[in-house]
Amino acid sequence: MGNNPASTNQTSTVNQVNQEGTKLNPGDQGQPGTPGMAENVCRECNGTGKLGATECPNCGGTGKVMEEMGGA
Image (cartoon, rainbow, N blue to C red):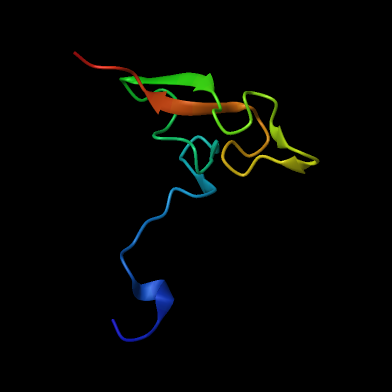
């Protein structure tokens, strides 16, 4: 493996693109269409997509995140 970062097996969901081409944002807990996942309003920006004058880094400016639905 060595010191080559490309050879690591770590996966990050930050700005990752899933198979359908949908960008995953840091606030997403899973991919759209995954059983048990639902769209919710971003708690960082309260659904506005902005923090001040800048794009919300949690939702990528969409105002929405994918979250796991509650359990029992």
